[in-house]
Image (cartoon, rainbow, N blue to C red; front, top):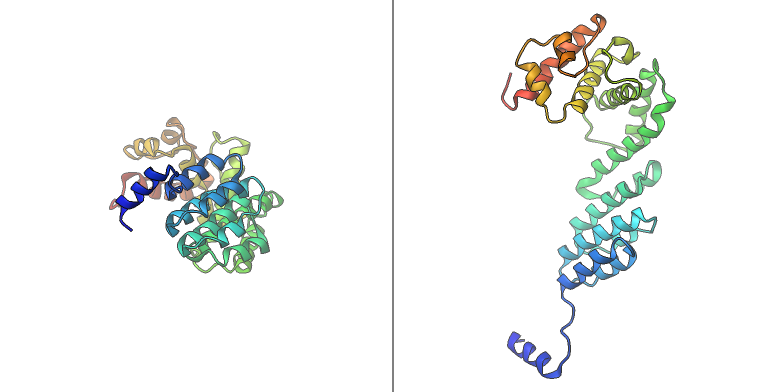
Length: 258
């Protein structure tokens, strides 16, 4: 139909034009914080499938955070990519773990592996306090078992070791991050895990890499690192930490550095 005829019709009759996709989207944005269920209903009125999917995904996350039934909203998304993304975002927002997460992540498409990995990390954060200093090998075995149970396919070879390294780093942050780093903090973890734990500690304290860039420009030793405000180290872990600094400096110098 000619747009001029449509304009003439509404002008002559005095009838208001029907809400546009933009109107429904903006209405959803306004409703999301107070009534996410109504926000999702507003999104469903959008004719453009991709725009509706984006809108529904945001509304579903808001609904999940409010304790509502959000996964059915994702199921109603017409655009397949946004439907999969919606499931991933909602599983994260609901903080699902275990069988619930495994089932919900199956239809997350290209985000399935990330969906499952995030769920494992949530489960790990709850389970880690059960594994004290000296139980790092047991924690590693537990993570490896959970990876199998979740059916993760694309994890890095030392995924479990990387997760244990993060646990060691978090443990240190709770008990005094400024002190010098020692081998004892890594318990029974392998040297490679201990090395990664130290790198995590440095990254968390130097997120902009400005401090490490300054350290790497000079002599890298425990005293100079400590003087710069990053953790120095004891002699018993020197070889491990010095290897970590080789990688830290390579990252600080940027791509292509050796």
